[in-house]
Length: 618
Image (cartoon, helix red, strand yellow):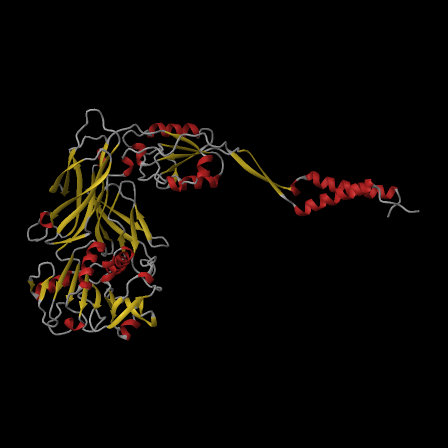
């Protein structure tokens, strides 16, 4: 007797097989459902919340009310931190890191702010759309302020100091406040040393120069310059009628030295040395003094600015006090007895420097003429500063001096050049650092005709400035002028209110904590710099001028924290109040998590088996 597979049995087998296949595949589905997590409130704790027109107390009460019932409050400004009710202290309003941290926590997010954030382009739109935003804008007001100060980082006796001061106004003038004239003043320890009447703009920022001789600094008896070391100048905008006086002044720290920071010895002078001296002053922002000797070996030095004769003894004193000495021209001009004013220098090219100063050697004679094209840089201490330059588009060097093998072998080759783009590359720029007993840095620039880069303008001029700046930064970095390199230096000596003073580790090798003794505002304190993997550390200080000294007797200097901050100024809110997306969470479920599918598979196969048994099927 033949038995046929009935449609019912086929259906049961298909259902059971399909259920089994689905269980083996195990697809995952997701859905959103209302979140049961407590809300997270991000409270803006930047200085603008406590500035004129700010609504800090109202924001604090709002955050507490929104977090009632188990919610959490985080403060955000320049960083994200836990909640406290202290007045705001952060000098920046960065919302993006706070939203990113809140997204990792999950649950509804609420932002309480005045709407003036400093990182609007970096805020992820999707995270911002999900958050509820409560904006408490500041009341409008008029403010005049000093925005920025640019000037020399180091000055010497006889220098003329030029400060480029940016100032401006923001907000709407109050009724009857039509005064537009004010006075920019420069004070040092309470004594006015320069002033200038200016006209305030209707809105925005403009710049002007304040020029005065270094001789106006207060002079203690017996000091030709004044107070050797450091000076903290205060540039103030006086005679203005605004509602926020805390941004009417800014500090500028400069180092005082009886000698120029950079001395250029050109024997003989040429276009290369002329462009080098000018560019060094621009990129290094330190005093540069140039002496020229037209006749090699005679030692007859002249001031490059006035061509007045300068005694060799005066040149020697300038060299001895400099932090960087440039020896450019014919090497024979510095090798003969009495020809070079440097003391303690080596007589061979590429040798040691003067005293403990860093030295840049630039032989401009006895080179091989031709078109020497510079090749892209390889690994070196200056590679990062020279990245991004289109080396193939630069004019060729006019000649190249072949360096001694021993001087190249001990140094790091920064740039090479090839004659007519053919043949083996030859060293064009090399740098080297002294040993433990003499930590001075030395560099050699072996090509001539590089001034054509600057003369050509455009990207070639920028490449020339980048090369000179990289050499100057590396040679001057952390050098105290006595042959001892500082371990740590502040990346900037003046920071706005609410921001830390950034420091950088300058030596090679392992980093160590540095203990600093600080003195300022009649108080002394001790703090420790702890560096991260990138060699950077931050030091939190209150507004004021601080002198620092390493506890082991090493580094010394001055840093300042302004009372001024961009947070004090009126600003247009960049955020609007919004309800945001309802707090929801994503729930994912795998098919194997659905119990009924197992029941379907088992029931289908069991029913098929029972049916087949009743029909006598195998």
